[in-house]
Image (spheres, rainbow, N blue to C red):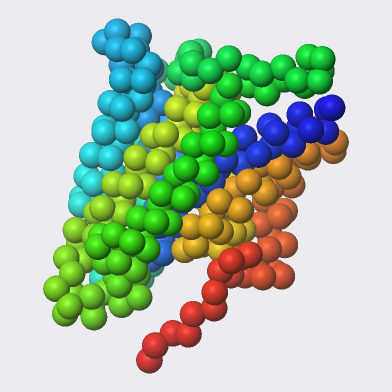
Length: 294
């Protein structure tokens, strides 16, 4: 039963990576920007929930809604202040350096407000654990909610992109910003919406991550953010189903690596997978080769 337990834990952790990776893949697919501050929005979202419950006395579900709204607004502000001026920058290096700067800014703001000490995070998932096979297999409520929510989010995002007017605008902007603007699409507004959705997903991922692994520090989002980026590349950055597949596979690989190889080597195994994918199939599992227009 231990194998099945590890598999469920791997899919659960991978679902968190997938939700984070969806934010990465949407922003890159539409704005062609790598938002490395995305991981720190996860941390901010978790802190907002913690402060709303312990400080303001809100019920956990209300605190989650507050966190999603706060992170959505934060994503729009980050895009407008830090990234929009660089939209037509000649070098992608400027965007990368700005993203790293925003990441450190968010970490230091959290350090200033909440301090560096590790805080215990109370789970917001009300569902009890399920015991199967004569109590030899336990599936936590957090694992169930995370997996189900990830599938719902991926399905909803796919339908949103394919069926809604805003989703079609995102597709148009991802293909050609100039042509989209000539067609009357508000390019800046579309990119801001993309950041807003990605940041809202980061808030959800932060709550789920800290509910499953109940500790919180200003650096909580750093490593999951990087691993989610690996998941996005693994699945094919710019592809929503690819982010889901990459996240789940990466979570399973990490948990199995900890269980059967070495817990100290788990992160090295994850980044080793990234190197192999970049060598064997640089576009990822569902990524496509795009011919540059000249």
